[in-house]
Length: 277
Image (cartoon, rainbow, N blue to C red):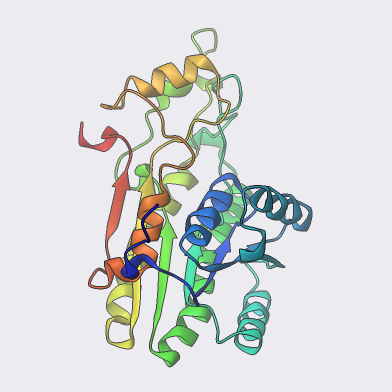
C-alpha cells in the first residue's frame, strides 16, 4: 500500500470524540487512528467506553485509543477534560461533536412515540441539552483553547435531516390509528439543523484564529433495522441503499486533516443522494 499523501497525515495530533462509545463514534475513531491520530473517546457511559476501546483494539488501533468519562452537558466536566489534555499533551487538536440522544429505529421499523402533539418538554430539553447545548459547550471550551494556540479543527456531526424533513411515512403502521403512529421526534431535526448554524457561526468567529469548523450530514446507516424499514428508506435514496457504517471514513479524514485546510463553515451531505430529490 503506498503511503498516504502527507496532507492527510494526522500523526502527532490528538482528537477527542464526544459520544465516542456509540456506533459512529467508534467508526470516527477508527477513521482518524487509521491516519495516525491519537484518539480520546469521551462518553458518560464508562462501561460502553471500555467496550468501544476493546472493539477498536481488535481492529488494530489499541495503541491509538484512550477513553475519558465526560458529561457534555456539564461545563465543569468539559473544562476538566480540556485541562487534563493540556497537561498531558499539548491539548486537543481535533474536536468531533458527535454526542446525541437519537430515537433509533428499532427492529420493527418504528421509533416509538415522538408525536409533536404530546412530545414532552422534559424530552425536548434533555435531547437539546445533549445534542446542541453539549456541542456548544465543547466548542466553547476546546475551541477557546485551540484559538489561543492558533490551530485546531472542530467537526460537528449533523444529519441529512438538517437539510430535509423526516419522511414520517417511513415509520407508518397501517394497523394503527393516526394518533398512535410513531414519528421521528421533532428534536432530532431541530438539533441537527442547529448544529449547521453553530458550524457557520464558529467558523466565522474563529476564522482568523486558525480554527476551522465544518460539519457532515450523514444519511442513515444500516444497523440491524427491519427489512421493511430498510426497503422503505432505500426506495427514497437514488443510490438505492442505506450507508455502511464505514462509508464516512474518507470525509472524516478529509475534514480533520490539512487536506481541507482552506475549508471552513461548510456542511457536507453524504446521503446517497436522498436530499437532492
